[in-house]
Amino acid sequence: VTGGKNLHTWCDLIRLEAEGQVVKHFGIQENWEFNGLLTLRWLKFPWDRYLDTSFAAGDGLSYATEVPVIERQRHGEESARFLNYLMFEFTFGLPKYPWWSLITRLHHRSGVFGLFDGVHGGSNYLCFGLRYDFL
Image (cartoon, rainbow, N blue to C red; front, side):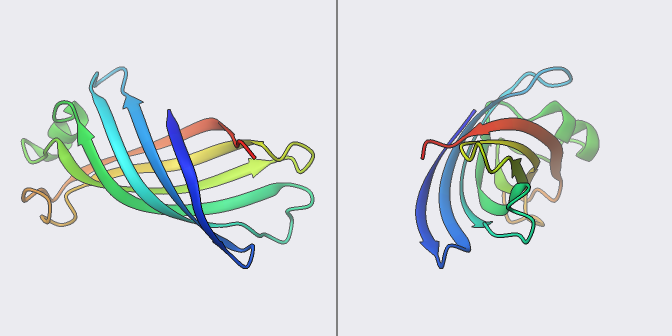
């Protein structure tokens, strides 16, 4: 679940957003994750009259309630609860329904080459979802 706020828009092309996330992992790992980030979103594409599209890149902080199992498996014990959070996202929606869109997102946690607690590894998840914008 995410919640966001539009902070500023430049020339109807780029928007600065703030976002908070509450994530529950299922399957291999069962931890919760809390993320806060700032995002820049590119709003205009040539085909928007047919398929409204946006691209976003965001960076912030991630806190996991326990060191994620998948990070320990991939990188030994080298991980931490508190890491950097990075995301890249595309949204796709029908112009007739501008408040609804489908999203695909790369959800990335990492130590930023040792900057966070000496951690050099991390984890990636490809996510899909449904977005509703309160206009």
